[in-house]
Amino acid sequence: MAFLVGLGGLYPAGMKERSMAYAPLKEVYKDYFYIGAAVKLGEYNSTPFYQAYGERLLEHFNSFTAENGMKPENIYRDGTYDFTYGDRLVRYAREHGAVVRGHTLVWHNQTSSLIPGKIPKEEAKRLLKEYISTVAGHFRGEIHAWDVVNEAVGDGSQWRTSSPWYQSYGGPEYIREAFEYARMADPDAKLFYNDYNVVQPGKRERIVRMLEELDLVEAGLDGIGIQAHWNLVWPSVDEISRTIETFASMGLEVHITELDIDCYDGNPSTPQMEYTPELEERLSRRYAEIFEVFRQHKGEVTSVTFWGLTDPDSWLNGFSGGRFLKERRENYPLLFDGKGDPKKAFFSIINW
Ligand code: XIL
Image (cartoon, rainbow, N blue to C red; front, side, top):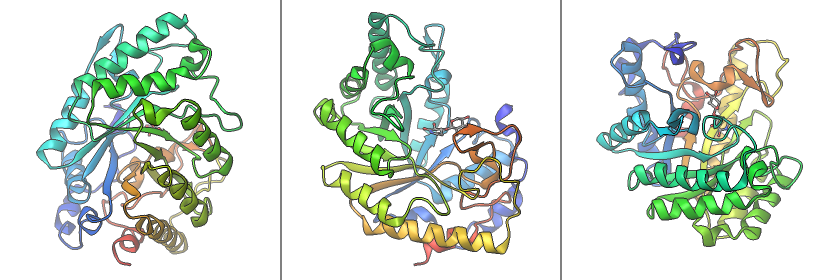
């Protein structure tokens, strides 16, 4: 089971004993927003590790996102669809009173089993329609919000022209079509455009331009997903506020979809650091200021999802500054440590 690699540090026995000692996050924030976590394949099967993981998940979170399990590469192969994972996640969430964020229908990564690269436009159009209608149709009524399109705007230019969808269409119209198909397939799901660096002023403006140019609200869009792969120094709380306000003033919902705080500030060459008391303190203050901004935007920010549950299961142990690392480097971006214990950052956001 590949997904177990690197998760060895969790200490199942302790998690249960400690579970009643402090308020659950989802209770603390129930009048503000959903509190979510990205979950990995297999997290609630019967091994002791995943039993413990599941307990922590259920204790604090009321929204689940599949970290990888509902991406095209895990659903579509050789013209057939496999909904095993998504069905399991949906059932689990329903049994425990949580909602599911669907992630993601249209992306340039983890999609090569669906669209390997540039293909004839007519074929791409047929595939986009078939895929979205089939997948969003299958989960119809079960998904709180779909990340319909992920990361389609460029970092230095308007569009991500390297996307196989962009290449095959010869332009960005696939984005609008994706929202139309998703809206038809699941009339009740909230439909999101999701991206990273949304708080960066240039990219934020490009996203606004996209919304207007492609008339995405008319096509069915309800909100903007701010991934929030942030770090200890970036972005400023002012920039976060401005970003939320920009989209809220357009009548859109804002979801924070993939929150984590990279303790290496996006630098892939910094050697591994220990989790010192100073770092613990910095992280805690950083989370405190970020959640203060979220609380100030009550009613505008309606969901906050962490990209993982415990530090050792974070993707940031293997990813930094836009690329995958050759060797694992321990990062400390989340609220729970490898023993499943809440860190200081956890307490900084439940006590304010
Ligand atoms: C990441 C997963 O966390 C990793 O396990 C996987 O190897 C790559 O994808 N933006 C997204 C997420 O929208 O789907 C990505 O998730 C992180 C960046």
